[in-house]
Image 1 (cartoon, rainbow, N blue to C red):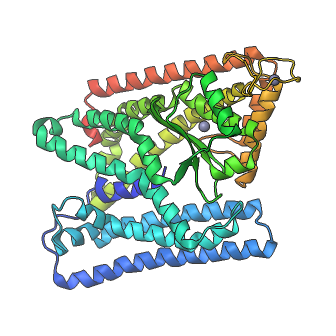
Image 2 (tube, rainbow, N blue to C red):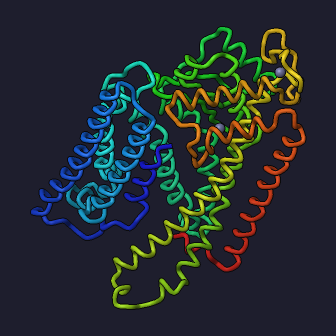
Length: 486
Ligand SMILES: [Zn+2]
Ligand SMILES: [Zn+2]
């Protein structure tokens, strides 16, 4: 998910920007445009310097080291932060929305003004991708992609996922205001709107994925037969299995769509080429696991249910002494806004970092166990191992994990990490470290009780969290916290 575009959208349309200041003086138009161009140039030059430096270091060593990859990843993240900071400055200090609305008279034009307000951000993103291109080229797993295709892939990946959702949301809001003007102003408009939007996104996400990423169906052949047999064994249905064309830049897989008759499993081109068929089946099993355990709808519920928690946080911040005190410094509205916004962002960020991260890591492990089961034969004492997804395989979906199955999945995991240039010991917020994921799976070998304990633990976590979220929503409702969300 392209988070920086989401944040940019929030900066541009979710916060109060100086858009209603009346007509802008003609003489201010040129200096403001110059400031916008200056911002874009700043991002372009930082990106260009970083990209060239990483490419230079990679060529010096002959082969890029993990340290250099890590440095590049941090540099790219820093660049995204810089882009957002500059964009925030354009919106709030330069007053870009004001220029668009009053300087050019685009107020009220449907979607044109929004696109123009977003334009500097899109230009900066383009400049960033362009600047980092030499570095990404030097760090590629294999193969080569021209600059034009690289930029097109990046733009499609970033915009294709988010823009349709935004258009849907904008259109939905317009419609709601026109059809039910009273209801659209009510307290329930936000949660109900989010429920509808969340449901639509879960159901329609396969369309967005196909818009965002170039794909083609996995051609018929031994691999496709193997995966289809595996899917049948577990009663898993999907519209198609797609190969995701990344120009061999990414080793990854994913599943999208909450409805069985409108759902895709994606395997990246490099994953299909670099892993053997058994390991690909194991990765495919991991994706089936996410669906079988209903992780997507649960995350939908989690984000929605967190509205109650958010409302309580916002309420607490609003009534805290921080908001009420009136020292000379805090009388300054800018300082108050900064303090208020900073506290809110920090609290909400911490909540998602800790709670969402924890649940996400548990779900990944659950999907990992499913991936092991997908390639297990059920004999605790194997080898000899029976290929459960081969032509002659007749292994029930409920068969226990077997040592070869666990090894196959662990090897697939290790290969994906190595090919992506990740170190096995490095921790990942949403997935946990590869080394620990593998150690956990190996600990399940010959221990059916340990697996049952783990599954019961996850079920308990889901239940307790759900009850907690419902309780928070009830408390927020009873003390009238929901209006603080606005
Ligand atoms: Zn996963
Ligand atoms: Zn086996």
